[in-house]
Length: 120
Image 1: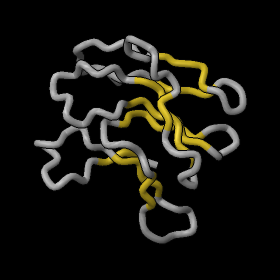
Image 2 (image 1 turned 180 degrees about the horizontal axis):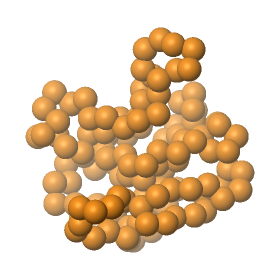
Image 3 (image 1 turned 60 degrees about the horizontal axis):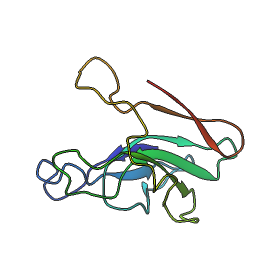
């Protein structure tokens, strides 16, 4: 699984990421249906039925003021992508300007299949 920006001009549309999976049995890349916007650190749930990622649904936020939240999407597209913290008024991760580590935290699963652990 990986994240890639396949926009016509990814430098201009920098926050239009998609989640992709390369099937073990071969074939082309599979694109998961997620809202337009950034997607960071995707992780499979322990049972393999969900993918969790950090992102938001505002691809036009060039200033970075939209809060990053935890989202999930089913590995077969169902359930649809869902913001697990829509009322949360701040970032799900700590952010700082730096170039020495992952700026968007690490997402982990805690129990089946509830999101529960972040580390940075």
